[in-house]
Length: 116
Length: 110
Image 1 (cartoon, each protein chain N blue to C red):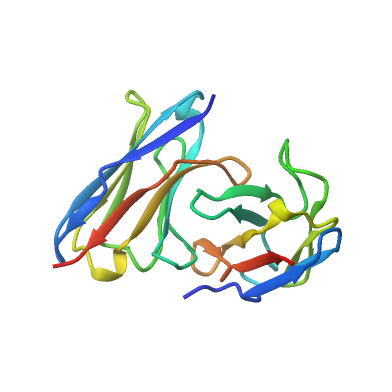
Image 2 (cartoon, chains in turn yellow, orange; image 1 turned 90 degrees about the vertical axis):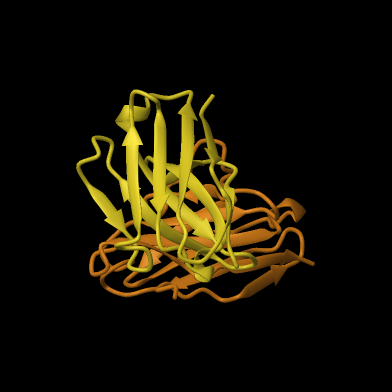
């Protein structure tokens, strides 16, 4: 059974940093592209970043470019999102998703709240 | 802000057909596949349509996707109470070099 479990969310002050993790199981993690998608409270979905299966290709939304870094560790079957310079508008539930002809599996999400 | 535009709401009675539109441009819908996601209250999104008009295993054939030019549509036929959810379209945007989601449509079953 495919499972994606996010962790690392929490309350952080503006300008602070946080690292989100996504533990993958039930499939060959190294064979799939992976992505992060976020959803602000009461708002729609926003794509954040994607990384290819090999890690060679990485893409970011303009809203996070230069502040967030996506990475993966196939030995640990894990996806990461390093977030620096956090702003109030980064407050959202962050989902990791497997990318195979669309985002076919999603985690349950982890809430990041940026507030003083 | 979202690059793909959807109506904020749609509704129908059980058994009716409901259609949700998704308007984009030549750099996204016009040149790439369209995806549709269903999000039930308090849950993670679920892939409903991939490759513009393909259904993943387990998705009822009541759901269908189509595209014409820079616009796409999701049709729900034989509307059921469990279809009450938020629906989002998505497509890769060649100009932005990223994925863009639609603004989302809340479907209500009357």
